[in-house]
Image 1 (spheres, rainbow, N blue to C red):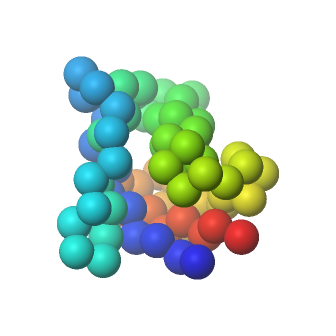
Image 2 (cartoon, helix red, strand yellow):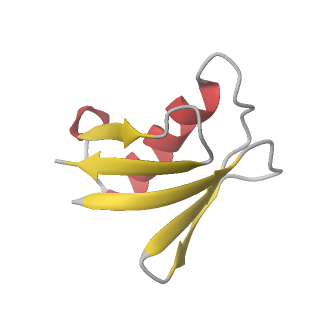
Length: 71
């Protein structure tokens, strides 16, 4: 399954919001040293109840728009 994600960093709380077919993910971490991407993967893992090892960022590792693949 592939998801289109828009990430917002530096937020007061971490959450996932479904916006039509896409998802908006708010994370507390800043996009420094890959911390925001790591938090994003953990949130997606909890939200979809799947192991972290099954989640990959297919494109947009340095962008606010990302495509995530869940195996």
